[in-house]
Image (cartoon, rainbow, N blue to C red):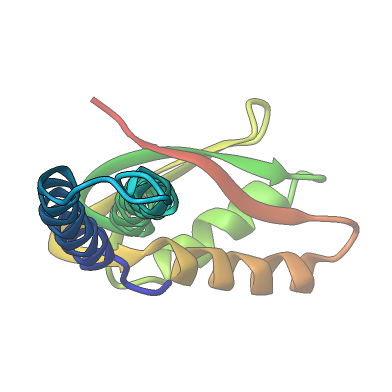
Length: 161
């Protein structure tokens, strides 16, 4: 995912620059005598619209950047115990295969699978991290070996307390 963390600051600076230009232009327009075109307020309206657009885009970018940071933090699991839902454990062999597959990852420990609740609980070892995408990839391979519509995709991965 692209890193947009610096874009809100850039938009803020651009908006501030335009705001300063408008304030100087407005003070110049107030000091100049009125002409047939008026005091220049018609020229300022489009610039204020541009400023509003830049501010809104800056805020939207900040929201997306914050969402990206949150998503990124959820993509890397740090030491601790996690619980997740498994999409489709279709037979009695699925639970043991999921457990065996996850135990094969050197970063994980203490894996348990509840086939009736369609959940898995696992512990990321102390001083270790694991990408959720890596777990999903290895489980996808295991589901393909099992066949029969098995889908070991994890959802709602949450740390347990």
